[in-house]
Length: 274
Image 1 (cartoon, rainbow, N blue to C red):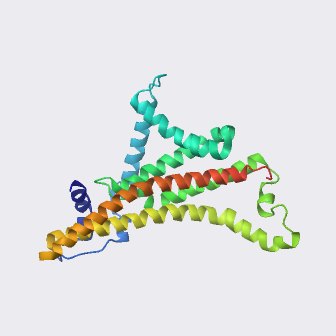
Image 2: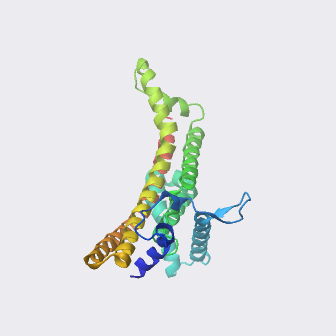
Image 3: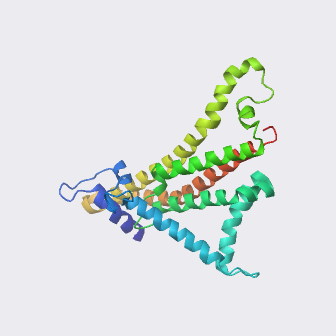
């Protein structure tokens, strides 16, 4: 019931009106909260920005604590940190790019994976209760980083041939380039950053709205429902709790998918035909 209490404590001010009562569905307005710090300045911060800063500081602190005193026989904290880092290093960077190139691009892949994971998991942290990746600024910035990185990798590998081989793939009859080249340009240089941005954004946005819907319905049925209608609150709470567990999986999967797609794009840019 602590989970229910935390969730309803957060959503009640947004979704319920003390004057009108009744059930109010979730709203996109959750993602556009009022400014609470430095209003009227270029550094104005709302609730979502504050959560991002907090999570980034927590992430830096955790890795600092896990790596500040490295030992041959690792401590528990060092072991957990190494396991987390090795997951990205081995399963993404080295599997896709090999040891040499994997080491080159490992810092970017690490930063992408753990920042997305940290910003996604806030959706189920009591008191935060919103995945801060669900506002387009953060996914868009990471998509641009991914975009610039794979283009840089391709140009660095083959300065004179990267764009040529990307737009005019080998083995295609020349007359077909009229059709193939625009498709390759659109899919490689336009769709990639767009799909990366929207995939992360929409999964977290929809997940938040579903959680708010079920927990606010639970609040309504238990506190305002009469008779047997209160039993619906039990059902909505159970579904909300199940979706909370599912959101943990989504938080991890979205971080993994975004990072592995970035690795795949870099791998394609480094391919020998370029």
